[in-house]
Length: 93
Image 1 (cartoon, rainbow, N blue to C red):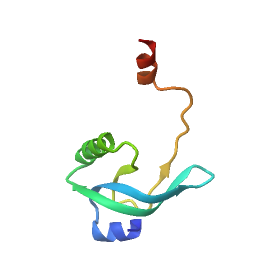
Image 2: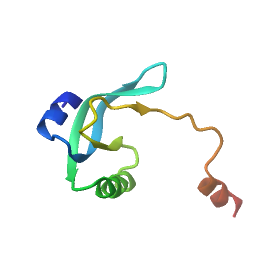
Image 3: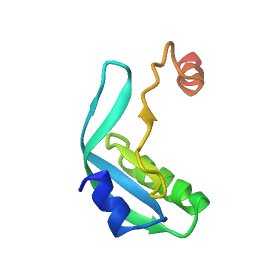
Image 4: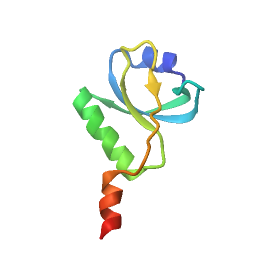
């Protein structure tokens, strides 16, 4: 589905979605070309909790929690430099 179709089908609701097809622009903007709705949630807090559950179970897949009140999705990729602290601790011992 497209974001416009999701907004129409789920007006003003919190969702957990999965990007089935996406690309990144040269400016670092993530564009979701095809999206699947995984869950409808009663609040932003519940959507975030459910997002974490999905992400822990399937870490290689691309999930987001969003509210359909937004006309456009504004997803920007961050460039990580270095290693995460959890990995550094694991490598020390």
